[in-house]
Amino acid sequence: QLLGGGPTARMMKMGYAGVTNEPVTDVQEEEEEKLLQERKDAVLLHHYYQNKEASQDGKMSDFYNEMMDGAETFSATEAELDNYARNTINLGLIQPHGVFVAIDSETEKVLAVSTNAAVFFGDEPQALFGIKASELFQESTKAEQAMRAENTSLLNPVGLTVKKTATPVQIVLEKKPWCTTMEIEAMAGDMHGNSGLWASHSKVRSIVDGLRSPRNLQSLIDFAVKEIKEFARYDRIMVYRFHDDFHGEVVGEAASEGLETSYMGLHFPATDIPQRARDVFTSCRVRQVVDFQAQAVEIAWPDANPNESILNSNMTLRAVHPCHVEYCEAMGIRASLVLSVMTGQKLWGLFVCHKYDAPHFLPYSK
Image (cartoon, rainbow, N blue to C red; front, side, top):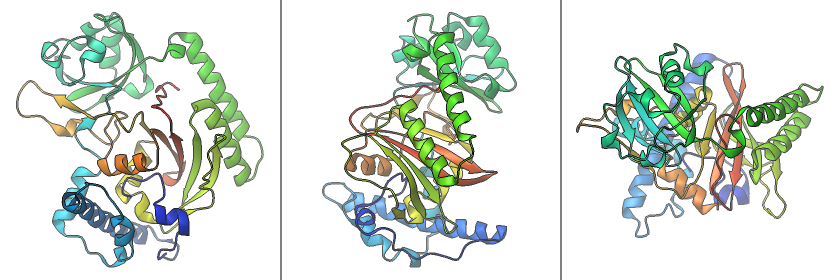
């Protein structure tokens, strides 16, 4: 399991039985351990693709469990490391519940747009190229000001209404050296207007106030998973804590009635969530997958020379690696949400949220 969030069948039955290292105390030693872990991840990714090509049904089968027995001795080639770096996180695709738009920093005109543009804009990508982006919205002045802002993080998400379709949307802006990107999602019905935003803010504030009450660590975790489950409406919420040797342990769980399997107390190897993914979680601290069964969407450009670097690991809409899709579908997971838990600049662990029976969309503002 390469882009994790859950245990393998063997791990569920046996718990973590892999080789562990002594706790890392030196920064340089920790970085060396991370590089070693990346090499193991790269080899597993390479063998995953090899197995898919060789397998008649194209599935992972039991190859991961077989590979793990010898993973400590694997030595990644430079080609495997390069493939790992290019394909683990940035696939050049987005999830289809949102629309992606890139605009030129100088002209503020549309440079690129996802192929599902008609979902919100009512037009195919070819009709949008070269249009000034702010003119796509009823609140054109507000849109223009947001796109020109130096620090867009203070504005996100920006609530706007599409001019042609009258669709209320929320937009997450990100400034790049040569362009500004917009990740556009539908505005949830209960979030349209100040009353919905205030109700959401009030609920989050009450959760934060509860976390400030004097508690030991375990009672804090138990309180947090319960409150997040009630607020976010997922079927299962887990706290996944990283140990010093990078393996993970489920130290908190809240689940809906009827879910028989509990992951509480289970340990999983460091390869369950690869090093590159852990690095991303330190900068991009919220990761949502609305529907694992949905088909990823490409980005359209007006010419034949797309700039794939426009999509990065911090994007909320970026598509999901096929290995992770396959794995979650095998576990019956339809949607997920992952939230980073930081201590200073170090990734302590993750809140992992699963929805089983249907797609699930949590608006950016929530």
